Image 1 (cartoon, rainbow, N blue to C red):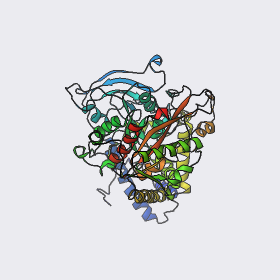
Image 2: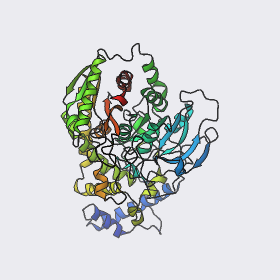
Image 3: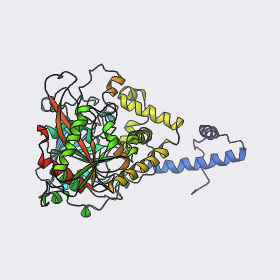
Image 4: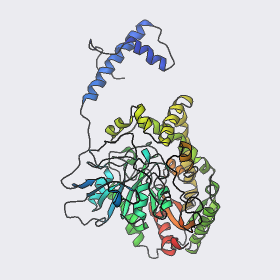
Length: 535
C-alpha cells in the first residue's frame, strides 16, 4: 500500500468509534488498543488525501460547439409527438462542408446517451434537471460522418423496462397499432424509425433493449460485438452487458451507420479490444459489392434448439420463425438445428449480473473500470431519498432491492455469474465453429397492449414476462446479434383483438465476435428475397 504521510489535522473528523463501526460492518472486532489507534491514524490520513482529490475539478472531454452547434433545442409539442416517442428535439449537424456517408440522414438518439446542452431525461421523474456537458463518442462520430441529430428519443424509465409504458413522459405507441407497445427500453427509437420520422436511431442494449423494439416495430436493430462501439458518454446499466448500436429500416442503412460509430476510442475500456476506427470493415461496401447478394450458397446456418421452447413462446411465432428459417435454404444455405444447452440458462446468468451489478453501478461502485463516468448523472441518482424512491418505476425499485439483497445473501453472485458468462460465450463459439451464423426467434410473442394508468407493479412487469429470454444471453456472451423482421401476425389481446390488425415478428441472427459482416450478409440476402410485410 502507498501512504504519503502519517500525520493528520487536528480537525480531522475520523473517530475511534468510526473504526469500530466499520469493523462491525465487516463482521469483526478490533480488540487490540494499539492496533485500533494505528488503524484510526491510517484512516484519518486516507480521509484527508481523499478530501484533496474530491476537491479537484472533475474532467469532461471537450465538445466542439462551434463546429457542431446545438440549434432549436426544445421540448416537443404534443401535436408534433403523436407517438409519444420524442423526449427532446434539436438540430445538430456539421457547420463545415461535409461529404460523409451519413449526409442527409436524420438520427434519433436514445435518451440515455449524452448530448451536450440537450436535457437528458432517461425516462424518469427521479430527477428532472440534468443537462450533460459532454457528447458521447458516438455522437461526435455520427456528426463527423455528416449525419443530423434530430433529437433524443424516449427511453424507458431508467432503461429498466422492455415494454413502452414506463417513461415519465408517457407511453410510446406502436406505429402499427396505437395503444400497443413498441418494446423497450429503446422504445422511442423503434417508433420513430418505423414510422419514418427519422432515417435511423442509436439504441442501447443491455438485455435486449435494441432488439425488443426493433422486433415489435419491424425494423433492423443490431447489438454489436461487445465494445465495438465505445460506451463513452452513455449511462451505464452494468459494464459487462452495456452495448450501443444502430436501428434502421434497412440492412444497408444499419451497416452504414455501424461503420460510422465503430472502433475503439481509447477511453472506454469496453472498446479496448476493438479495432481502430480506420481498421473497421466497410460493412456497407461489403454488402453492395457482393456478386450475388441473394445467394448464401455454401453457408451453414444453425437454429438454436433451446431457443424454440423458451417461456411464453407463442406457437404462431415459433411456426413463423421456422418457416422463415426454411427460406434460407432456398437461398442456398444449409439450415439445421444445433443444441446449445447453456442457452436456456443465459437469461438467469444475465439476471445475476444485471440486478446485482446494475445496483452497484447506480451507487457509483462500478470498480475496476477505465473510461469516462457521468459523475454528475450518478449524483442525481444516489444517494437515494424518499422523494426519489416515490418517483421511481417498479422495475427500478425491484433492481435496487434485488441488488441490495444479493450483496448480503449471495456475496459471490457476480463472480459466479461472470464465470458462467464465459462458459456461455465459449459454448456459442463452439457452435459457431461449425456454422457461419446462428438464428433463433427474437421475441416470444408480438407486441402487447399498454397497461392502464392504475396498473399495479406486478401488472406492469407481467407485460414483459419471458420477453428477453432469447435476447439477454447475448449481452453476457458479447456476440453480435441482428434483429430482423420476418413477417406479421394478428393481434389476439387488448383493444384491437379481432380487428385483423397485424404486428411484426422477428428473428435474431448471431455471428462470431466481430463477425458483423457475416450477420449482415445473411440478413441482407433474406431481405432481398422476401417481403416480410406480406408473410
